Image 1 (spheres, one colour):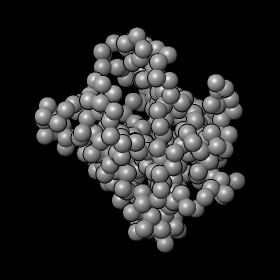
Image 2 (image 1 turned 90 degrees about the horizontal axis):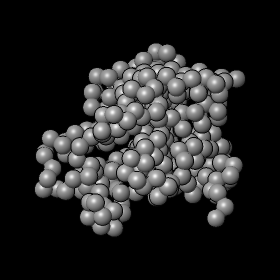
Image 3 (image 1 turned 90 degrees about the vertical axis):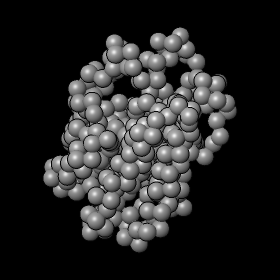
Length: 277
């Protein structure tokens, strides 16, 4: 069987890693990109607590699922490395059938009030949350059209359309961060309108509240372990794999927001999840 090729950004850990593994289990060969190449070389903001995960362990898990994996280092704020990762994937596999824009900017500014933001921080957030993803999609789009189509999945955030329950520190988030997420949420529907006739299908994936490795360590360090429990990343991976492979996936979801946890629950994609109350 000829496997299709997926390219997943931000796949050293968390949602990206879970999606890459789920796609491998569903029949894709998978290229993965991120800044962290070797497991455990990234740290929390304290500089001491090592974060689990790296491209090396993600590729190992992909290959354990019987698929071919390929790791390419990439930094969203480094346009040269971004496009090079796509080109290396094309050179290695020959094509890309699914692009999952999962990587996001992780740096200062996301949780700062407007008056405390430096303009350079705002520009970096837009670069890492909007412009980089657009550049990658634009770079690959001519190839998608030439081969008769592809799937583009954009990992979005509900902060794009929801008002925060309070100020920052009281359940809220930064204005600039929300603005970048709102801009990115508009990409999938417009992509379907502009290139649906070329076979390009795009989705906005809303993961909901997910307990990633970083979040679990942060909560533990602050004494909040066990509080604000979200879905495991594997739930989002299962929803992404379903959307990518199930011929019965509703066509009306193209260009729309797909609530990953709702679909996983509705379709019983993950055994034992959600746990009984």
